[in-house]
Image (cartoon, rainbow, N blue to C red; front, side, top):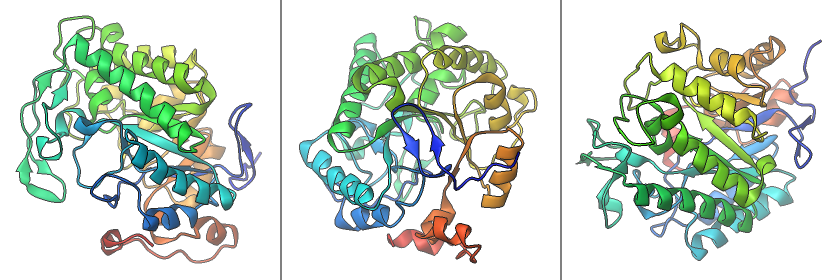
Length: 347
């Protein structure tokens, strides 16, 4: 049977999507200096409301979560009201939208906030802040148990703020080498307490964050993005697979809205995943609705879904170049090719 990606898809009892095509989270660094969404952002997202679900650009949960300039937040009343304008516009155009909740961990930079950079362990990364190359990364502080409890509470509070701002749900950013992902990989986590050394311990922070968010907004409005194959600001380690094996088994019991792969190119095979790609590994280890991502075209995604590789597809750069992406693929119209020059403004 051939799946129609543009037909409605029931995610759960709370959410029915008008199609299986998500707009992927796309960091644009276009919020104002108070990290409040702008009118340009309102119009940008509203133009893409034909997606089955828009996942917002990664949105920081508190000041020390910031590692890029002008990334929006969800921790002040002004930010909440700014996002409310976005979600109102998306809903007025018939769309649905999740907020992606973000803490960058060891790739945060104190240029953006007063305080220390937090991570699972005091292990830094080389390089500098994107778009601000003069700012080089610093060695983070290993989070204390008190720090960890505060982070968990702030993820939950950001989820509550997202619902107040009109979002239909939240996606926990547990991927791409950021804070939660750092706890899940041996290259970034050398803790010897209950958050390190064993799969159960290393998965603990991700599970506690998920439980706190579920308690705040409900399991049907909670999703998570994961990068089981280390590839971004992270070294691969064959021990990581056992961490994700354990984590995914635990997450399946929570009946989340979906699990979303975190990868730039889903053709990448990982030795640590026994030669599997991200989507192949996730499909084999979760019964939760799975969102594929990573350089898929619409036709490639349709074939992958029909092959059972995942259930839904998140499309990134083509949505930047084509606000009317859904209309174009529905009518078999030619897509505008993405180019990096398009990142200079929202349109």
